[in-house]
Length: 119
Image 1 (cartoon, one colour):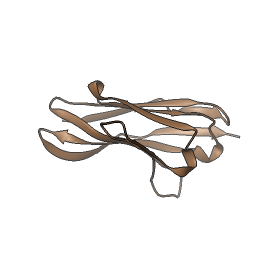
Image 2: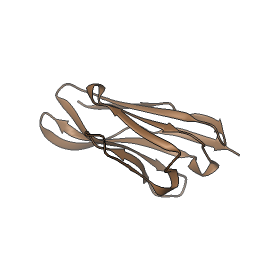
Image 3: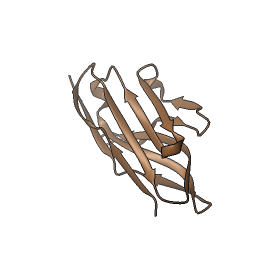
């Protein structure tokens, strides 16, 4: 069974920083594309940042230059460093991992972690 665990959310003032972490555990699991999505109240879940196993990254325009995604392939872990946070970054952040479990490709989600940015 694949388990995806997130950590690192919280409350921060505008201009501050937070670092989110996410790791997948499970024998016979290999991660490929890993990413972070966010969902604000009353809005759809949108992609924030994504990184391939080879390290190619993709960011939403709203976070370019402020957020940095990185990963540790050996740990099947992904991180999101968020700097210069704005109130509009407030949302529940979800880790998303595409990978193979016993050689079958699937998509796995974390439970979500709340990020609140006060003005």
